[in-house]
Image (tube, rainbow over all chains, first blue to last red; front, side, top):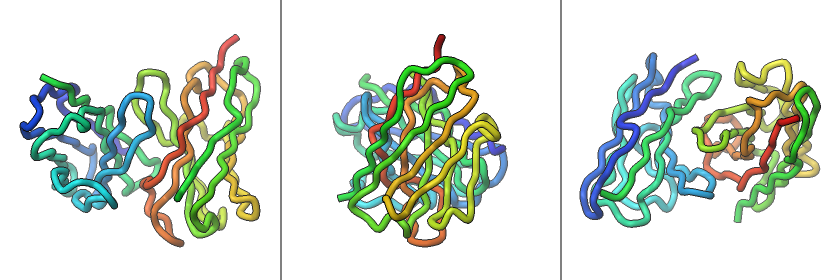
Amino acid sequence: EIVMTQSPATLSVSPGERATLSCRASQSVSSNLAWYQQKPGQAPRLLIYGASTRATGIPARFSGSGSGTEFTLTISSLQSEDFAVYYCQQYNNWPLTFGPGTKVDIK
Amino acid sequence: EVQLVESGGGLVQPGRSLRLSCAASGFTFDDYAMHWVRQAPGKGLEWVSGISWNSGSIGYADSVKGRFTISRDNAKNSLYLQMNSLRAEDTALYYCAKDPAHGVAVYYFDYWGQGTLVTVSS
């Protein structure tokens, strides 16, 4: 099983600032990585797939990069609606696995 | 509009069984793989199981293999999860999720339902 780790566990950011979230895989997943956003009481929402492709309707301030074992989600200028938990997920191998999440909260 | 509506959750004793259902609408159900993903209270996401459009390819997390069975009825636009020998650690919100690729699955999730809560306790 591929183990996904995310850092930091919590990121405190002021509105308008840049947020950089990291995700690491225990072995290469190529570019088969997705990012999701989850707000309290809501289902997750797909943000990024293929490590760097934004899903339909996702604002351009969200960007993804990386391949192999190291990935990054960047939110260029945080808006109030972006404070949430972010999960990465590898889909290169079964079982599909998620990272433990990074909570982005208001500084 | 894609809609996924889960049902069948509830309180169940350890060792008992439960069957979850997911009613899909707003897309051609039999063109897409489907998945179950769960989230224990206050915890992260865990993929549980996935099934291809024609049920020809099925996968399970190690934590549920041999106890859970995924199935689908394309005529009824429905996805199911039969859960046997339930344990306390199976307590979670169970989401139904759609694979985005038409035909051959890609194994991430573009639409999610709102979930159905399963509580395993005596």
